[in-house]
Length: 55
Image (tube, rainbow, N blue to C red; front, top):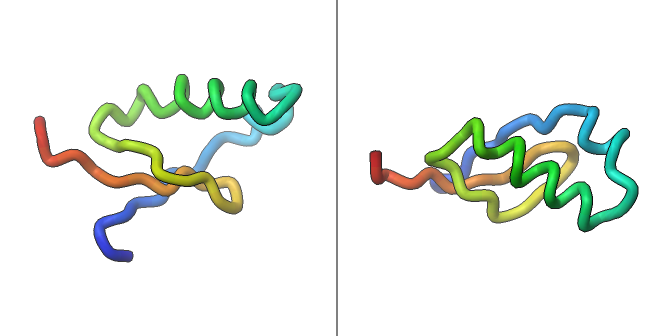
């Protein structure tokens, strides 16, 4: 997968988001649970991320 990781996003994000911008904000808030991951794309309910090696 070439250094990329997939994080399954919870379904509530898609149910509660009124539009694309709100979904993006929910995703960014949710991804705070994964501090070493940076989202590069969202596809098929997954956040496609790169892992930061800084701990």
